[in-house]
Image 1 (cartoon, rainbow, N blue to C red):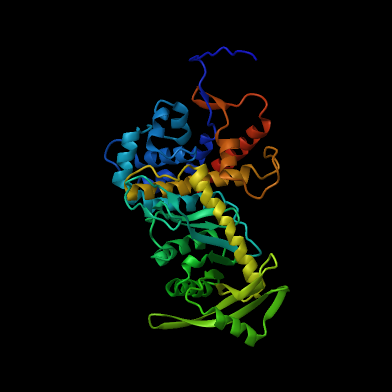
Image 2: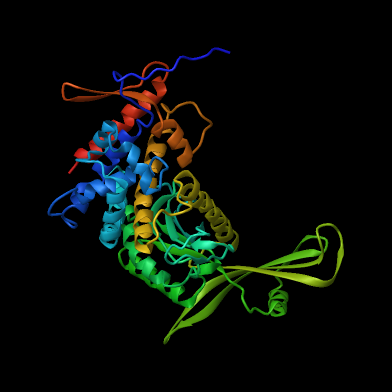
Length: 454
């Protein structure tokens, strides 16, 4: 095996994360300075937009802790790629986020909306519907004394944020931190109030929207909130429907078996197992208002298990879905089954962006980090969708969507020589990476065009 001679010279300025230049273009396309600085001005010192862009830059490299900024303080490429006047230190970054957390959080979601609007990001429907998947997920922060850390539904201490993903690409249109012990449905109608206008901005009027949620969101208040929004959208000439998994708590299984017998809906799928699919109109009440909702229920009765063992008493399983769709019950179930795809998006936040354990002890600061992470996630998703799924993308297996980790490997952590000469900034990728250079140039041109538009 050869023994390599190690040298360090001051003549070369190398970077192992050339993709950060594209994140800077995303920030420009999202008009970070125009959104942040007029609303959060400073009399002296570093601009608030520099703080925001520094955090987004770190998150887009998969670094979530404040101390990760220190190696970049004397890195000219980090400063130039994000358009910073100065790179903040870890202490300054933490203090400014603590002080301005609420104000930045209220503006962070606007950055994602502008990015997706101005770059004309593709929002692909599924079976004719632009689907918006809403769900909560658990973040393990056990062994810490962070504010609002409590027991989650997965049995560890942490947080339970709520998120919304739009289209087959999984664009994040809402991500909010919550205490770990908070139930999915608690105050979710306020989340709807912030989410629905964003969907209206991003989805074309002629495209029907379908909200999908699991049984944690089964509650009269939320059903009425979605139905009210559906009526409002219909008045505007737009279509919005929903599928919400039914929670069969406190249901009499014997009564449902009897109801299936009366409807003559039983179908034997194998010896000892039969299923019935019922479509019912159920009246729900919230305060003084009453409304009828369609409920699809699947009743499964087993007298013989899958191994051929006869059971002493029949096993009855209930599963159901609230919906405003008028299509067949089988189509509703098939549309809901696609909802499980959003679990991958949760894992990308927690693993690819390294946000399982949030960096601050303050709840509001962690919340703003999560909001900025949603913007960084959308930036990376945009680079992946435009640059890694087309004809000029590096050779990989065909896919409709690339994972964030793939974007980090193929685009963000691409090494290059950084040259600043004659008022020009140059990235020299060297030989052997022609496909990656073509993707980089194409992405930069498209983002530059979006940033230059009105």
